[in-house]
Length: 402
Ligand SMILES: C[S@@+](CC[C@H](N)C(=O)[O-])C[C@H]1O[C@@H](n2cnc3c(N)ncnc32)[C@H](O)[C@@H]1O
Ligand code: SF4
Image (tube, rainbow, N blue to C red; front, side):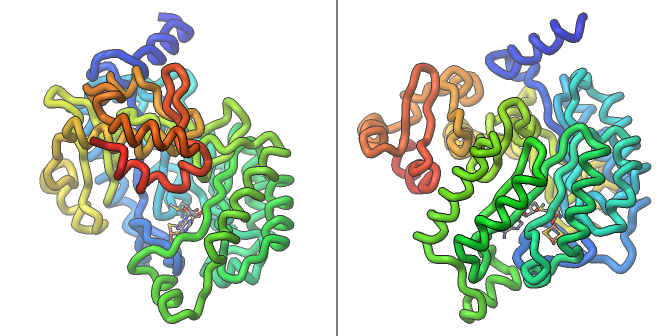
């Protein structure tokens, strides 16, 4: 089969093909970090010595186990997330990529992303990651000023961040970086200046997140005691508008609430989540959604790294029990993910993935009112949320779903 025919068949599979042919996105979770950032509630842990050999063996074993039940599906993307996957050795990353390529039918343009932190230790491994097959990196910069980096508990400085980006741009065909804005005390003028600098440094993709206070984090305590104060809702909305309009001047469009790209440079891996495609998640705390003979299955690995590793060593995988995603849950999940995208949800794909039509899933009176109020738009095959609607997705869906 020529690559062109293969790609077209995979595109068709993404739309309407039977469940078994659904292409796959593979997520690999590396749960370790050099330090815990005070705002972060990701499944990340600090260890005096990272047990790399053990975790590499366990990740490889869990990949084999997952592949045995999935069969040789078309593989479109691999994403090493964390935690801090740039703390993995390039050999470990290379071994996982090689195994995934052998177990699945890798797309000719397989996207392989690795999340990297910009400390000098990690930047020193960039060449190794490139040699291992990584073709896209996503660098966690968070801020371009040293005072805020310290307040965010980061282990790098602004000059180190810029050096890592410059090196990354030389080595990788595709590069993105993350910033967190709407930080405590951040005024519009300061964010505009920082954003302008970021846009000058950016290639064709950026993730720009508004700071959220997550339960159980150090920031939550500081926030509760009034020791940090976030911009009020109006300021935060204004900062979002500034972000969208400034990014657009550089050709970076918000294809998802917090993700900006030049058309064609969107993260294929993240699009698979938002378009409600199949994804396998391996490593502690990783989630998956897999079309198997019994329907759409939700998988979830144990969160605690060492308990997960013990389970893999004992039974080949670190899961508790997989659960079947019901039709109603599929409809809710697909809308919650898809309406984050500026392209919205395709009605045909919605029916193929959930087994129910959009008309069956949504309350017609509320839908008409949401369109009338300017929160949703229905055009041909697509249902989209407007920027105003995207800010209120949870409330909208709560009312819309029957
Ligand atoms: C898995 S995390 C981090 C990747 C990498 N460990 C790092 O910190 O650079 C992905 C991104 O989520 C964002 N993030 C994490 N916690 C956040 C929060 N509380 N509010 C907003 N963004 C957050 C950060 O921009 C971060 O880079
Ligand atoms: S933000 Fe990144 S580096 Fe910081 S604790 Fe979370 S995962 Fe680790």
